Amino acid sequence: MLDLAAVEPLVLPLAGRLRARGWRLATAESCTGGLIAAACTAVAGSSDWFERGWVSYSNEAKSELLGVEAALIAAHGAVSGPVARAMAEGALARSRADLALAVTGIAGPGGATPGKPVGLVWLAWVQRGGTVGARRLHCSGDRAAVRAQTVREALGQALRLASA
Image 1 (cartoon, rainbow, N blue to C red):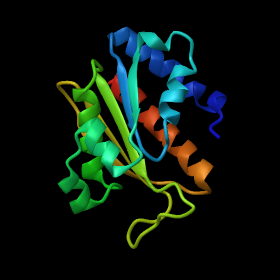
Image 2 (image 1 turned 120 degrees about the vertical axis):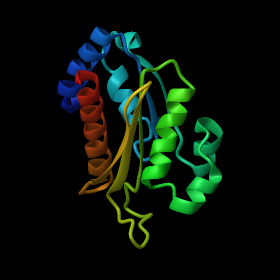
Image 3 (image 1 turned 120 degrees about the horizontal axis):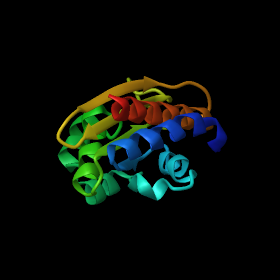
Protein backbone atom coordinates (compact mmCIF):
# COMPACT_ATOMS: atom_id res chain seq x y z
CA MET A 1 0.00 0.00 0.00
CA LEU A 2 1.22 3.47 -0.87
CA ASP A 3 1.70 5.87 2.02
CA LEU A 4 -0.02 8.96 0.62
CA ALA A 5 1.59 11.18 3.25
CA ALA A 6 4.99 10.14 1.92
CA VAL A 7 4.24 11.51 -1.57
CA GLU A 8 2.49 14.68 -0.39
CA PRO A 9 5.81 16.62 -0.53
CA LEU A 10 5.79 15.95 -4.30
CA VAL A 11 2.05 16.32 -4.92
CA LEU A 12 1.63 19.71 -3.22
CA PRO A 13 4.34 21.52 -5.23
CA LEU A 14 3.13 19.73 -8.38
CA ALA A 15 -0.38 21.01 -7.72
CA GLY A 16 0.96 24.52 -7.26
CA ARG A 17 3.00 24.47 -10.46
CA LEU A 18 0.17 22.99 -12.53
CA ARG A 19 -2.31 25.56 -11.16
CA ALA A 20 0.14 28.40 -11.82
CA ARG A 21 0.51 27.33 -15.44
CA GLY A 22 -3.17 26.54 -15.90
CA TRP A 23 -2.24 22.95 -16.78
CA ARG A 24 -4.08 19.73 -16.18
CA LEU A 25 -2.56 16.26 -15.71
CA ALA A 26 -3.68 12.87 -17.05
CA THR A 27 -2.24 9.48 -16.13
CA ALA A 28 -2.09 6.09 -17.83
CA GLU A 29 -1.03 3.39 -15.39
CA SER A 30 -0.34 -0.29 -15.65
CA CYS A 31 1.90 -1.63 -12.86
CA THR A 32 0.82 1.04 -10.36
CA GLY A 33 -2.87 0.27 -10.82
CA GLY A 34 -4.05 3.84 -10.27
CA LEU A 35 -1.74 4.80 -7.41
CA ILE A 36 -0.44 7.91 -9.21
CA ALA A 37 -4.01 9.12 -9.72
CA ALA A 38 -4.82 8.24 -6.11
CA ALA A 39 -1.84 10.25 -4.85
CA CYS A 40 -2.93 13.25 -6.92
CA THR A 41 -6.58 13.10 -5.96
CA ALA A 42 -5.81 12.63 -2.26
CA VAL A 43 -5.13 16.38 -2.21
CA ALA A 44 -8.14 18.63 -1.73
CA GLY A 45 -8.78 20.78 -4.78
CA SER A 46 -7.10 18.37 -7.18
CA SER A 47 -10.02 18.75 -9.59
CA ASP A 48 -8.38 22.08 -10.51
CA TRP A 49 -5.41 20.30 -12.06
CA PHE A 50 -5.98 16.52 -12.26
CA GLU A 51 -7.98 15.80 -15.42
CA ARG A 52 -8.33 12.01 -15.57
CA GLY A 53 -6.54 8.69 -15.37
CA TRP A 54 -6.66 5.23 -16.88
CA VAL A 55 -5.66 1.90 -15.42
CA SER A 56 -4.71 -0.14 -18.46
CA TYR A 57 -3.36 -3.28 -16.87
CA SER A 58 -3.87 -5.70 -19.75
CA ASN A 59 -2.47 -5.40 -23.25
CA GLU A 60 -6.02 -5.26 -24.55
CA ALA A 61 -6.80 -2.31 -22.28
CA LYS A 62 -3.70 -0.48 -23.49
CA SER A 63 -4.97 -0.88 -27.05
CA GLU A 64 -8.69 -0.29 -26.45
CA LEU A 65 -8.45 2.59 -23.97
CA LEU A 66 -5.28 4.35 -25.07
CA GLY A 67 -4.88 3.38 -28.72
CA VAL A 68 -1.58 1.54 -28.27
CA GLU A 69 -1.10 -0.54 -31.40
CA ALA A 70 -1.15 -4.29 -30.74
CA ALA A 71 1.76 -4.61 -33.16
CA LEU A 72 3.83 -2.23 -31.00
CA ILE A 73 3.16 -4.37 -27.94
CA ALA A 74 3.98 -7.53 -29.91
CA ALA A 75 7.24 -6.03 -31.19
CA HIS A 76 8.55 -4.53 -27.94
CA GLY A 77 6.51 -6.06 -25.13
CA ALA A 78 4.15 -4.20 -22.83
CA VAL A 79 7.05 -3.22 -20.57
CA SER A 80 9.04 -1.07 -22.96
CA GLY A 81 9.82 2.53 -23.76
CA PRO A 82 7.83 2.58 -27.01
CA VAL A 83 4.70 1.23 -25.29
CA ALA A 84 5.04 3.62 -22.35
CA ARG A 85 5.36 6.56 -24.78
CA ALA A 86 2.34 5.34 -26.75
CA MET A 87 0.35 5.09 -23.50
CA ALA A 88 1.25 8.68 -22.59
CA GLU A 89 0.45 9.92 -26.08
CA GLY A 90 -2.89 8.09 -25.98
CA ALA A 91 -3.75 9.62 -22.61
CA LEU A 92 -2.95 13.10 -23.88
CA ALA A 93 -4.93 12.59 -27.09
CA ARG A 94 -7.98 11.31 -25.17
CA SER A 95 -8.06 14.08 -22.58
CA ARG A 96 -8.03 17.82 -22.11
CA ALA A 97 -4.78 17.57 -20.19
CA ASP A 98 -1.63 19.49 -20.96
CA LEU A 99 0.67 16.85 -19.50
CA ALA A 100 0.31 13.07 -19.45
CA LEU A 101 2.30 10.46 -17.56
CA ALA A 102 2.37 6.73 -18.23
CA VAL A 103 3.96 3.80 -16.42
CA THR A 104 4.30 0.16 -17.33
CA GLY A 105 6.47 -2.33 -15.51
CA ILE A 106 7.02 -5.55 -13.64
CA ALA A 107 6.20 -5.03 -9.97
CA GLY A 108 6.61 -8.71 -9.07
CA PRO A 109 6.95 -11.04 -7.46
CA GLY A 110 6.38 -12.89 -10.75
CA GLY A 111 6.28 -11.73 -14.35
CA ALA A 112 9.99 -11.42 -15.02
CA THR A 113 11.33 -12.55 -18.38
CA PRO A 114 14.87 -12.70 -19.76
CA GLY A 115 16.05 -9.11 -20.02
CA LYS A 116 13.04 -7.80 -18.10
CA PRO A 117 13.52 -8.39 -14.37
CA VAL A 118 11.16 -7.63 -11.53
CA GLY A 119 11.55 -3.94 -10.76
CA LEU A 120 11.88 -2.85 -14.39
CA VAL A 121 9.51 0.06 -15.05
CA TRP A 122 9.19 2.44 -17.97
CA LEU A 123 7.98 5.96 -17.20
CA ALA A 124 6.91 8.16 -20.11
CA TRP A 125 5.57 11.68 -20.41
CA VAL A 126 4.09 13.90 -23.08
CA GLN A 127 3.50 17.61 -22.86
CA ARG A 128 0.95 19.09 -25.25
CA GLY A 129 2.89 20.81 -28.01
CA GLY A 130 6.19 20.03 -26.34
CA THR A 131 8.31 17.44 -24.63
CA VAL A 132 7.97 13.70 -25.19
CA GLY A 133 10.21 11.34 -23.28
CA ALA A 134 10.67 8.05 -21.52
CA ARG A 135 12.99 6.74 -18.85
CA ARG A 136 13.82 3.24 -17.70
CA LEU A 137 13.60 2.78 -13.93
CA HIS A 138 15.24 0.04 -11.89
CA CYS A 139 13.19 -0.27 -8.72
CA SER A 140 14.08 -2.55 -5.85
CA GLY A 141 12.24 -4.37 -3.11
CA ASP A 142 8.93 -6.16 -3.01
CA ARG A 143 5.83 -5.36 -5.07
CA ALA A 144 4.71 -2.53 -2.79
CA ALA A 145 8.18 -0.96 -2.84
CA VAL A 146 8.42 -1.12 -6.65
CA ARG A 147 5.02 0.51 -7.01
CA ALA A 148 5.79 3.21 -4.41
CA GLN A 149 9.13 4.05 -6.07
CA THR A 150 7.36 4.28 -9.43
CA VAL A 151 4.76 6.71 -8.05
CA ARG A 152 7.49 8.92 -6.56
CA GLU A 153 9.48 8.92 -9.81
CA ALA A 154 6.40 9.76 -11.88
CA LEU A 155 5.34 12.62 -9.61
CA GLY A 156 8.91 13.93 -9.54
CA GLN A 157 9.07 13.88 -13.33
CA ALA A 158 5.75 15.71 -13.59
CA LEU A 159 7.01 18.34 -11.13
CA ARG A 160 10.19 18.85 -13.18
CA LEU A 161 8.16 19.28 -16.37
CA ALA A 162 5.66 21.66 -14.76
CA SER A 163 8.53 23.69 -13.28
CA ALA A 164 10.52 24.07 -16.51
